[in-house]
Length: 272
DNA sequence: AAGAAATACAACCGCCGATTG
DNA sequence: CCAATCGGCGGTTGTATTTCT
Image (cartoon, rainbow, N blue to C red; front, side):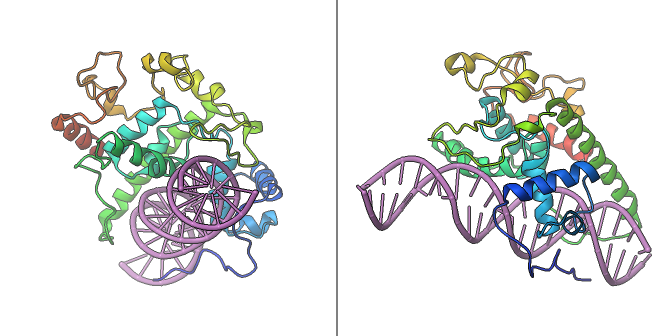
């Protein structure tokens, strides 16, 4: 079969995007909508590969994208989801409104792995990590139906994510146009405050900027969670925690309760 | 103050599954 | 059913920036 490269590299720009390019891309998508990535650069007058446009839009220009300032809540959530899902960054990102897979992936690789290791915690996901992408699965008739299933599933996921976005965005103006580096350890984007979108969705308290008080606050992102987690057994993940703990259990990120993880994993598999 | 090393993260690459004709 | 194409994902790289010596 083979696949031609997504675009001819000849004459196409690469590397960091300029403000002008960002504006062009944003305007074009606002007028014409997303999609048709291959033809988009040509239509929009951009000397970029379609993939590059998509990536730029998805990760930085799309309304509702939050940058930097990953809160403790979000960090906990990432860790738990990673434990459960492994390197399924897009799935993890889907549970964190305004966060992109790329950002989470970077954050994991640069911050969390180190942090977890320093805490003596194995950053590897749960042993029942979701199945690896299968190599060349048999494409038989059954594939058609399963394909449709998974497709539907994806659409559902997108709806959820999109709903979440809708709840969090409409702040296009906040999309940073230039990257901002500030002294470590706290990286603050002056152009983007997370307090408007994310925090308003949590229990109403920002735990990311509150020092000790923040540590006391147990809140969660009220996004559409995997439905199974909300079913009868509300105790999933509440190992050692009260009902007020969040869904996977604050303070027991790496619970030794393997049965619980097995259960969760099985249900998630069924979902897929 | 300057250079080296480390860090952070934007962007690219290649692959895969889904879709289409 | 097959081949071509597209969209999307995860791994990796390149480089700007910060920190260290």
